[in-house]
Image 1 (cartoon, rainbow, N blue to C red):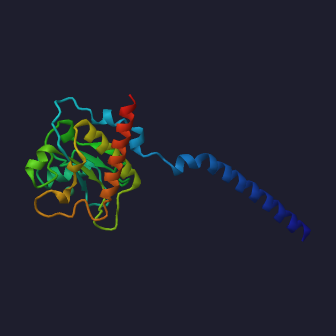
Image 2: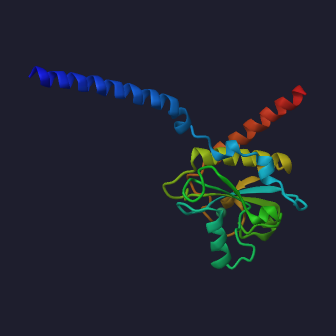
Image 3: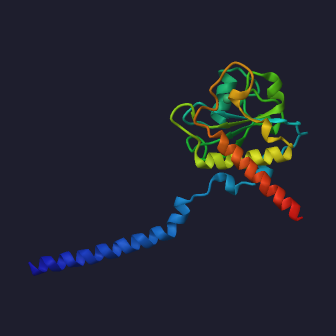
Length: 213
Ligand SMILES: [Zn+2]
């Protein structure tokens, strides 16, 4: 009985030590696991968006969802090329991943951006010629909503593009605001106000920084 108690007590002590070791291990590693940086924080948007050709004079930004659970620029490019028969492939200029296909928050640059040519992301060709198309992976009309990393990346990208091409906030629109055949895109769960708030916050910050110099 005593022996059993001894073993049990030793086990308890070992168990306690293991728990402490695990706790210390988690304490050290959790900041890296729990707050894994979105890809966008590690990426220089300016170099990501830099092109080797003459830049188009973009005047609008149109936000889309992919209406799929997952996917990436390559998958949509294949779909647009083979099913839609669009020779230029991927209809959007940028695709922002949700972790199912490309990384969560990863910004992929499409060929149409690299070549600075019109998108095929709305049914209105005059809009496609002047509007940058950004697609977030996910179906935000169903149960999904954009991930936090997707929204962070989107806000960073929109701020960069609106600043670079002097695109006013009023020209930042959702696909369903384009006058054409009706669409749910980018879905009822897309938090457009969050995007607008993010853009205005950036512009106020930028203005404040600017006045200091
Ligand atoms: Zn759309």
